[in-house]
Image (cartoon, rainbow, N blue to C red; front, side, top):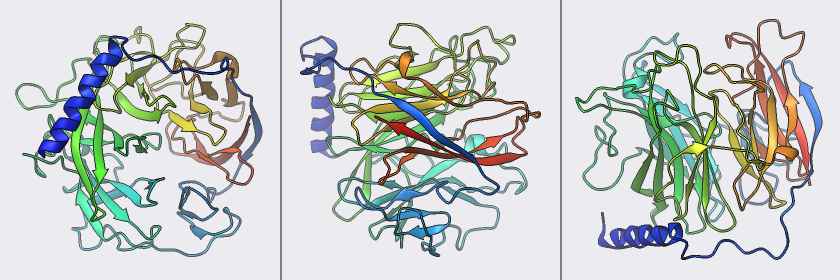
Length: 424
């Protein structure tokens, strides 16, 4: 690592220590904070996926969008054929896999960062998540500076220093333990200081170099915050990583599918998926919480995970499922995810689906702001999974738009759905 980077990190960590000691005053506000108003404006169940599913705006302003249906210049009213190049699968052995995540558009320079779920071993193509992925999955990244038309750069994500493709990060070894992103909620962010934070997951290795699960779950991992910065040659220098570790007696599969949001005072909130169940908790008696960790130094160090609570101080139950932190142009912060009225059992039930506001000073979920978007009904005879959330703000109406699917319990059937929420 370059000497300058070392000095920057040392300074940031020292500043963090001062924050924890109370030497830096809390965020000052001129008036008492109050929650806004949320309202479900519409819920449209569709016969085919919405063109907005996986779509995103191409810049920090304007109506141009890219998505699976192509490109739109009129806020998704019409779509034109659009094929980015090159194909990330071109020239690879037939059994290799590439799964691009939705692009992150840097709000400062407009460059696209596309992270890619990658598996470079022979697998059964009929299995979505073969057992080989546990040890061999890794992240690649591509960069586009022409709004996604071309991606000339395609490289594995590797931390600078004494690291390489076989050992890309501390505690991570390809072929022994995988690292990857969670679902759509695990979106990179750019901090006020210009760093790119990627919320990832790394399965845990034991002292003998084999994956272990101290919580007794099928898998066990740490939330892994990867930090990078843009270089002048339009590449990214990945120079730091932090592992947010769980207590295996309280979260049987560790910390999973982190979602990030930087608050007005520069602190960063990370909400993670926990779990109960498994060999050490067969009756699912461990409380099924979402977990929070907070960074006071821009993402370089993080607090010990604690159960995320309502602003009333109450705990709430949530299944082992992804969730999504989202900032609106009105300056408010929202969370979308599943909340249950009783202790969950592992992944279930993944309903109802809620949206609620996050207090930017306390980071608590505001209970009075919660709006139920959907839940199981009499027609859902094969169960219901309301997860795998995607979110964006419509730049014309300013509605929060959630294009996703209502899956059955086994994920063998689904109905596309789009929720639109007004936010004041």
